[in-house]
Image (tube, rainbow, N blue to C red; front, side):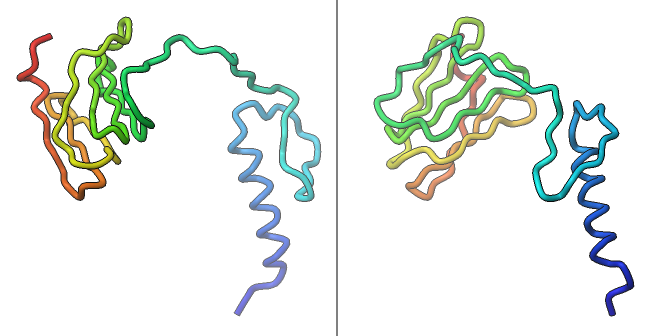
Length: 133
C-alpha cells in the first residue's frame, strides 16, 4: 500500500537530492522540477590540451593512469598497449601479445602489474617491474 502524499514526498526528495549534489549551490530560491537545477556559477573548461599522444596506429579504446601517477597505459584497436611516462608523455614500452583490440586495462594496487583484456577473449598480466626505465 502506498502511503498518503507519496508522490509529493518523492518530488520533495528529488529536489533536495538535486540541491545537495550541486557543489556550488548557494541560493535558497525555490527550485522547480520542470527544469534542471542550475546555479549561477558555471564551470568552464579550457578548449586546448597539453599533450597529444600519437603512437598508436588505430583507435585508442582504453587509457589508465597508474595509481602513483607515474605512468599512463593506453590500449588500442591496433592490438598494442603503450606505457607512457607522465612527466613529458614519452612512450616507455610497447606491449604486444593480444590478437585483437585492447578492451580494458587495470593497474595492480602497487603498480607492479598491468592487466589487459582484449577482444581476443584473453587476459594478460604484464609484470611492469621487468621493464628497464
